[in-house]
Length: 116
Length: 115
Image (cartoon, rainbow over all chains, first blue to last red; front, side, top):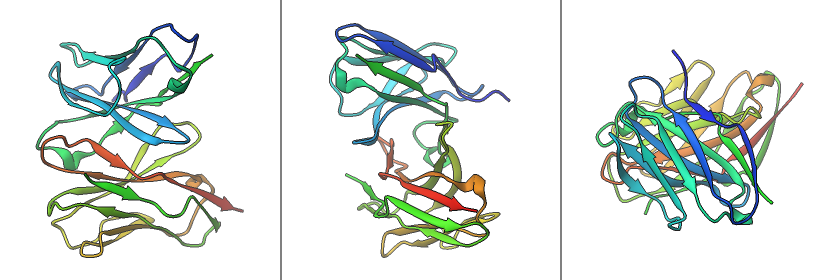
């Protein structure tokens, strides 16, 4: 059974550019969550998608957005990149969203974004 | 809002010995789930063990066990017979079963295993 796949693994972008990261969840998982991980702030919740709808959103500016497709694959987009956006972006899938919190997440290996 | 605190930024243990990683959390909810995740240098977060708050029995997964103290809001992870492959960052996490049930993580504990 394939795991959660995130592409690309590494990315270097320039300030002001935009970036799109991709996440393919485990087959059958309909919930996809995104986290930003930095040494200073730790793991911070960005947003969760379930059945193509954003269910939850963390405290991030509007430059951070996402979407989910009918096959549950998800993308997140960051526009007008800032140096502080440099981080490891982790995607996690779970079997269900509301009501299934006990299942926990299965994480991908992340995308390391560096903004220069 | 729920918060998770890991007060030990770093821990070390001798191979084959036992180590306990601490975690406390703050919540007003009576029903919730707690998790320990391991993040090795490969970066992928791996679920180590989970605990349901309504279950009094402590969860166990092979060499990994937890000490869940609901009244004290404490959820420590014990690793027995530590192995070199256990070296990683360990994150404690809380998840509510209700609306806005995103997973909240602690800051992590870096575990070093000495041969």
